[in-house]
Image (cartoon, rainbow, N blue to C red):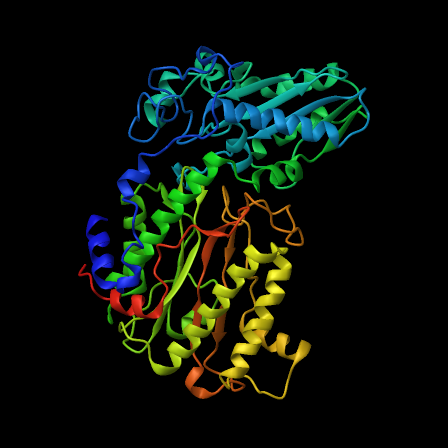
Length: 512
């Protein structure tokens, strides 16, 4: 990574010399939550216990987590406040004060690629957002009795088991989990079915808040459904409230987003630097993966698109198994995941290191549209659907000016032709999931604290005879991650090169 800093700084134009100001290692040690502990909170109540537990802590992994934090950058207090906010939001959705509320948020369970070989575990985002717990098959239950202000948080986890831990690694266990995750009580996960049956029976009438569609842990689904058999308990979904919380990033989350966006940006820069004719798309993917992990990401945010030439006209091409030719453009859609927070970046560059005349026309066209869309995001804070409409109009106009689309069309016909060349949306929310908070519709005006992508593109298939021959067989997308603020939008991926001269100066300059 240090080599990449020198390489980029030495090759970009003089006006861009400061593009990589932060040192990656300084960023990765800056895991501080900006949510301070208020005077009413006793620090001893929120102390992180010592010992080898079921996940990294500030005691066992001081290079990852700073003292006083439960996970990198986020305190126990912030997780507690999120649970309190969720309870208040859900209660406000129901007018009947005579009903108890039982909120059930399961963790993800392990997934297996074959027999006893597991995939890398990835925690359920909603569960992690409320607990900071990274252990599989856990369950968070929040019980708020009717006509009371207080509620109780119970966390069900796998208890200590010497035989299981011999094979799978340490567990936190019930005796320590309550303190570590700052909940009122911790119980063995095996006791959950009995607990939920008794709690719903004793809390009638009640509202059970549980995401019933595609549950993250089907193992406990039957027990929850069984507890709802009588007509005194009604089922509601807490996800919409959770997603409206998650779409607005706290100061500590913004710092984590900055870090993962920086890591993702540098991995793409390195992929540019390593690109040469004759190497494989798979090799570029290996560079992306290695650079992300070497800089502090757990893994990539999603299977990357690494598409040379006409393969880039397939939006979700992930075979990544072809060799790169001298005259091709390479489209990369990639991202890193750091402490479950994701970046999502697309860049397109010439394999040879030099844009052809017509490739440069298309590239500069997409770049101009992207820059204008980022400005619109700051000037008007429109809904993402409206930003998409702006993209289609801008693309259509630019394509007409370059003679790629006929000049005798306008209005909806022009927008329709532009949409055919860019059939995906121009933006989505970003955070704990790559397509974050999907229950927050894209017709909601963006607001400060949201992180969104801006990703216009053009995809012209080789057989598209509606476009001049010299422009066919190429896909171009330029995507940045943008924080909406009270002032100008902040491009979190600004260190990922995209000016054509800078790109040409970097491509192929590093030897694998």
